[in-house]
Image (cartoon, rainbow, N blue to C red; front, side, top):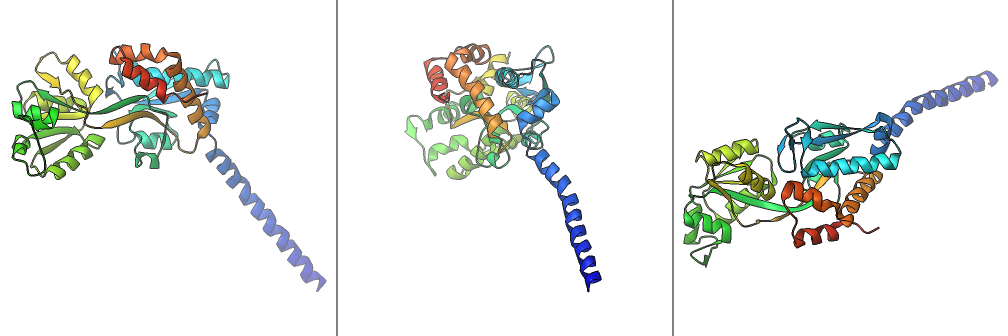
Amino acid sequence: MSRMKGVAMRNHLLHWVLLAACLVPVQAALAQGQSGTLDRIRANGKITMGYYNEAQPFTYQGSSGSPDGYAIALCRAVATAVQEELKLPNLSTQFVAVDAAERFNAVKDGRIDLLCGPAVPTLSNRVTVSFSIPILGSGTGVMVRKDAPVAFRELLETGQTAGHPIWRGSPMLSALQQRTFSVISGSLQEQLLKNRREELNVNSVISLVPDLATGLKQLQDGKSDAFVAERNVLLDLAKRDTSGKLVVLNRVFDYEPLALALSRDDADFRLAVDTALSELYRSGKISGIYEQYLGKPDKAAQDWFRRTAVPQ
């Protein structure tokens, strides 16, 4: 009987030893998985930023080959603030080009610490990543050729033709029939166009393009009647167009706050990013960055930054 008790005791102890041995690597893995972005930056001695190659004026590859743009300038300011917070004078900044398809997964997987996209913080996007406070109030715009039919241009710009409002079934909608709209595949504007086409029940064609250059070329070559995209991007394209044949309509179709994407469930890093951005907004330093890439900020823009800054 006593021998059986001894065997049972040894088996019991062995069970707990094995269980403890299994738990050690699990706890280590959990600790590693819960490590925040700031811990990773400290451990690596660098902060890694994602950017797009062709989203001027927000992010693009400058003439020197280095990333440039409005969002890049803000991300550099964030990097400086993180460097000071972590007391790492030798902290380096690495920029990694990402495309629209992989951008959020790159943040989720920890391949990049901050996405300098910028991106729209929709509910579906927030399933994968979190976002900073907005860096710009933006919206959808439309670019057309200057020789576009008057009724077509007027309808897009004012929502009316010849002073008459339109509605589903309105004869004025003939201006939209058989018209082709270029839009970047997977963008917020693609869904906006599809929804509007269904609401108005018109047979407009939506031509999906992979990037800005293709959308612009389709419009220039007459293969589409309008190019729909983020309005600041379109204004920049029009400014750089040498043909003088394109114009961005004076209308914002919807409001879209743009923000920087970062890891979900990382309150410390988000606090660092929002603190850096709020300081830029409150101090007025944002005006110089804004003017460099988007033109001189008017009073409405200045008020927007003051309202968006998070109070101390």
